[in-house]
Length: 78
Image (cartoon, rainbow, N blue to C red; front, top):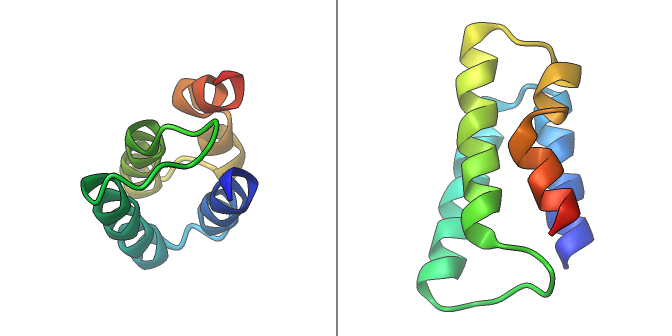
C-alpha cells in the first residue's frame, strides 16, 4: 500500500495535477482520521508532501524539484 500511495502521489506531481493531488490529500486525511494505518508510511507526512507539492506547483516549480523536496526524502527514509 505504501509504494502504491507514493507512486500515485509522485505520478500526480509529475503531471502537475493539482486537482488530483487535492482529492488525494482529502482521501489520505480521511484515512488518518479513521485511524487507518499504512505500514512504513506516515499519512501526516504524506499529506504534508501533497500540500507542499501543491504550493510548489502554484509557484511554477518543476516536477523534478518537487520530487526532490525534503519532505519526500523524509518519507523515503521513514
